Every structure is written in structure tokens, then in C-alpha cells.
Amino acid sequence: MSNLGQGDWRATLQDGRTVWLDGQKVDVTTDKKFKGVLETITSLFSMLEDPVNQTILGYKNNESTTFVHKAFLVPKTYEQLLEKRAAFELWSEMTYGVMSRLSDYAYCLLTGYYMDKAFFTQFDKGFSLKITAYYKQASSQKRIITTAILDPQIDRSQAPEQVEGGLLKVVGETKGGLIVRGAKMIATAAPYAHDVLVMPHQKLNKGQEEYANMFIIPLNLPGLQIVCRESFSSPFAEKHFIQANFDEMDAVLIFDDVCIPWERVLIRGSIEGVYEAQQHQQMNPLAHYQTVVRLLTKLQFIAGVTTAIAESIGANHFLHVQEKLGEDYTKIDTIKALLTSAEIDGEVNEQGVYVPASVPLQVARNLGTEYYPRMIEILKGIGAGGFIQVPSNPITEKDELFPFFQRYYRGTEVDAKTKTDLFQLAWELIGSPLGARHDLYERFYSGDPIRTFANFYSQYDKDPLRDRISNLWKQFEEEGA
Ligand SMILES: Cc1cc2nc3c(=O)[nH]c(=O)nc-3n(C[C@H](O)[C@H](O)[C@H](O)COP(=O)(O)OP(=O)(O)OC[C@H]3O[C@@H](n4cnc5c(N)ncnc54)[C@H](O)[C@@H]3O)c2cc1C
Image 1 (cartoon, protein in one colour):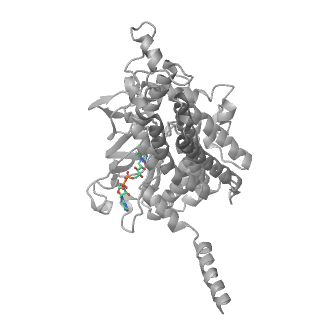
Image 2 (cartoon, helix red, strand yellow; image 1 turned 90 degrees about the vertical axis):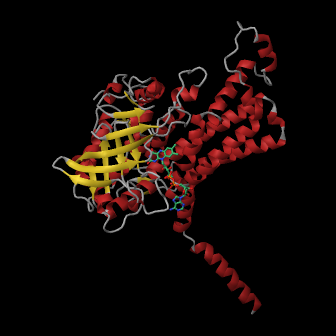
Image 3 (cartoon, helix red, strand yellow; image 1 turned 180 degrees about the horizontal axis):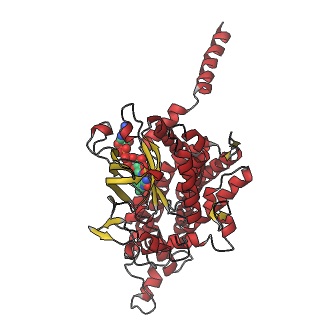
């Protein structure tokens, strides 16, 4: 397989996969709507070849002669955890935190399953061998990996297994593998990923073994249909910097009796096994760590744009605008503090792995679902009508309108071009279809926030809270006596 980042890796996606966009089967390597995102991925992976960045982003492990992303590193010390953070930051900064399914998250999940292979082998005796083989392959070949967990929204008021097509299920078995039928609702990056990790989302009950499977499959399997949403990419890179470069595509996966090769079936028919795998996926602190580093980068980007907008029109002199910018910075520093707390309060577990503390990361992820939409709202409130003032085309010295442009489009200490470029960039975040997709992404990527917060309630150690109140009543009684 060609090395990702060396330019020619895109040919590996001409592998017979079935990708649908705008009603047509498309070749993602030549379709112009994927050009920007694939170039971004190429440049990110090329950092593993570049002497300046490769030691920050990568390391050399036993599986590869070249540098491997530090998401695969199993950290033994606090210092190694910080090395992972530096790698996540480096990639996140390259896309301003906008792209989130660049594989580093999936690499972390995979590394977590690899670390805990002995535990999972009780549910499927092939687990250890298969995950080890895949871990070696994925790290040495630099495969792009994504996840597909949610089944389609057909009727959420019913148990999914009672809805026809509600759950991905086994419909047969051959010598070659397991035949599955159903769909997965969203798999970001699937059109250009090499592999996808698939498992059920909900807790299954005894008798539902046909749904209880976990596998990591190549995205070119016969019968697998990858159905893209509308593209939000733009061919105008100068004008639409974010849309032109960072539109990571979301797709539905339809499994039309797809044969999953046995070597990629990690758990077969184990209710308990897939439940543990789900918990692992939802609670894996190493993967959460990556998502929080990425979130922080994105919030810093939004706050940077908002600050620049406020300053460009002199709105930063108003007290309520200062209060809102202060709110942005408070949010950023809260997430930073939670990351630091997760790092410092991390512990070496029974396998000798230095694992960041889980609770601060869960709190950061929960807060992120509210912080991002709120920061977008603040940006809208400060820029106000200015976003709508941006002309449809750049106005240059050659244009008749240029003298008016210079006079009426300028800002406080910024010329007209700088100011309109800034508002154009902000419009991509607040008003473009891609911006709307990001608002949804940050609210939902880590699950339904309503249930995520409620789970935090269920799992929280509430005894110390209750004790305070019962101690208070005791104190009253004693004082009253
Ligand atoms: C841009 C984007 C990219 C994504 N990328 C991926 C990806 O790469 N891989 C992946 O696996 N997933 C991905 N997701 C899916 C994401 O994980 C889900 O959107 C999220 O878990 C919420 O599930 P849902 O969308 O099915 O909403 P639902 O669960 O259908 O919720 C819809 C509404 O019904 C309510 N509701 C539903 N069921 C219940 C219940 N039992 N109790 C109480 N309330 C309920 C919810 O609170 C909500 O208001 C992505 C989502 C987005 C928006």
C-alpha cells in the first residue's frame, strides 16, 4: 500500500468501493468535491515524513520502520501522555480543530482495544490475535479509519430490534465470513477512509445475539453502499478557506448482505462482549483525551475570530462585548484546566499504562456540547449585520467601486480587504452549510447530550453530597437538643 502523505496514496481508494454522491457513483480520488479534503489529509500525513514534525507527531514502534502517529503510542508515563497531546495539537492546529475524523480518534480507540485484548478475549477467543494483527497493519500502513455506531433513525420510540431495518444484524455465515444486513446512520470520513469500526450502540438483551457483533472492515466490501450527504465543499479556496479544505464528508453505510471476512470479526454474537466494547468506546480516556485537545483548538479558533471581529469594528470597547469575550476566554480556560487536571490526575493502570483521569475529560466533552453553540451565538451577536455586508466578489484596485470599498468597508485600524476577509471567514463558521453541520457535530458527536449528561448523573458519586445534607440535619438536631 502506498504511504499516506507521499502523494500517491489516493490510488488506494480506487479499490472498487461504492460511493454515492448527488445520485451518482463517484470516484472520490477524481471527484472535485473531495479534492480539498483529500489534499488536507495528504498534507497532514506528510508531516510524518517531514524531519521537523515527524518526531512531534510520530514515533517508531516495533510494527513499522517509518514514523507512526503517536495516537498508537501506549503511554507508560505522564511525559509520554504529554507527547501524545503535542501530536494531537499539531494535527488539530493544521485544521483549526475543524476536522475531527482524521483517524487519530479511531487510532486511540483501536489502541485501547489492543491494550485490553486479554479482557476482550473472554468474549471471543479470536479477539486478541485479530486485534493485534489489525493494530500492526493499521499503524504500519497508515490506514484512514473511522467509526459507525448509530443505527438509522426510523422510529426511536420503539426498541430498535422491533423496527424493520432498525439494527444491523447477521443474516448468514459462510466459510469466508459473516453476512450482515442493515445500515449505520453516520460514518464521517467513510467515503475516503480505508476501514470502519462497526458495533451496536444500544444495550442488547439475551436472545439478541444476531445483533451482537463488532468488526473493523475495509470500505470496499461488495454490497456496502456509502451514501454521502450533500457536499459542502467549495471550489473557491481564496474565498471559502474552510469549505474548500475541511469538508470532511459524512455518509450513511448500507450493508446489503455484506460478507465480513472472519479475520475482521472481532466479536461474534456476544451480548456481554459488545456491551463491554461499547462501554470501552464511550469511556476510553485515551480517545476522549484526543477529542478534548481537538475541541480546545476549535474553541480557540472561534474565540480568535470573534476577538478580531470585535476589534475590527471597535465593538470591543463596549462593556457587554467585553463581557461576552470574557465568557469565551473563560470557556477556553475551563477546557484547558480540565485537560491539565486529566493529565495530572492520571494513573498507571494494572497493565502499566498511564491513563488520563476520565472524569475531567467527560466533563470537558459535556461542556463542549454547550460551549461551541454558545460561542457561535456570541460571534453572531458581535459581528451582527457585518456578515451580510461582505460583497459577493472581492473588490480590487481595478474595480470602479474600489474607492468606495476602501472608504465604507474599512474598519477600526484595518483596511477594507482585511475586514471583509475576516467577516467572510466568520460567515463560513456561522452561516454556511458547513458551519451548520459543525454546530450539529459539536452538539452530538459524543452522543445525545441529554442522555450523556443524564448518564453523568447516574454514574456520579453522590454520597458525599448526600452526606453533607444529612450532617447538616444532625448538626441542627444536636444544637437544638
Ligand atoms: C455531523 C455529525 C457527524 C457524526 N459522525 C458520526 C460518526 O462518524 N460515527 C458515528 O458512529 N456517529 C456519528 N454521528 C452520530 C452521533 O453519534 C449521533 O448523532 C448521536 O449519538 C445522537 O444520536 P441520534 O442522532 O441517533 O439522535 P437520536 O438518538 O435519534 O435522538 C433524537 C432526539 O430524540 C431524543 N431521544 C431519542 N431516544 C431517546 C431516548 N431513548 N430517551 C430520551 N430521549 C431520546 C434525543 O434526546 C433527541 O432529542 C455524527 C453526528 C453528527 C451530527
